[in-house]
Each structure stands twice: as C-alpha cells, then as structure tokens.
Image (cartoon, rainbow, N blue to C red; front, side, top):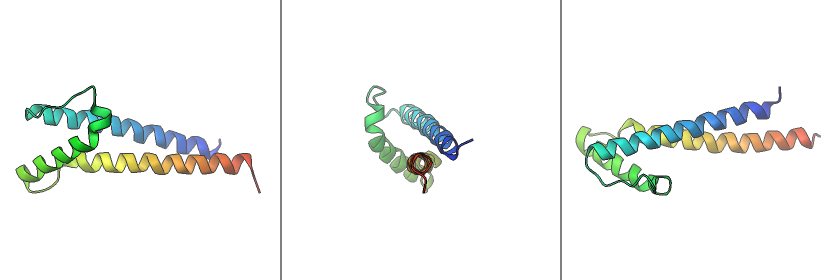
Amino acid sequence: MRISFLFIAVLVCCAGWAVVTTIRVYGYLRERNIPVSFLWLRFMILKYLGQYKRITLKETGKVGPLFYHYLISVNGALLAAIAAALAVMAERYPG
C-alpha cells in the first residue's frame, strides 16, 4: 500500500468533516433566525462562521466548538493534500 493513499483518505475524511460542520453551523444560525442562504453556503461560510463565533461568544462567554471543528478540518485537509502531493511526487520520481 502506498502512503499517498493514506493521505488521500485523511483528506477525504477531513473534507467530509468540514462539510458536516458547515451544515451544522447553517442549522445553528437558522435556529436563531439569522438569514442564511443554503445556495451560497459554500462561498459564505467564513461570514457565517464569524456570525456563529460572535453569537456563541455573546451567549456563553466562549467561542462555540463548531468554529474550531471547521478550522481543524479545513487545515487538516490542506495539510493532507500537501502531504499526498509530496508522497505522489516521491513515488513517481524516486531518488
């Protein structure tokens, strides 16, 4: 088994985690009657995360967990993509 498959699997898992977190942030904002467009969700997620952060900070005194879930999953996907690309290059061009 090549190591690049491992990194690709991590990438897919992190991407799925980010999608689930995005949908949960969408639901959280909708529960609080904040206008959120599902159609533009992919492009407006950073705005919605800012709103989520502001609301949870105001309600509980600390930032809600979904904010960190999204940051960790997106950064994990980015690192896995870079590692997978480097692994593929190392396998194709050894030495």
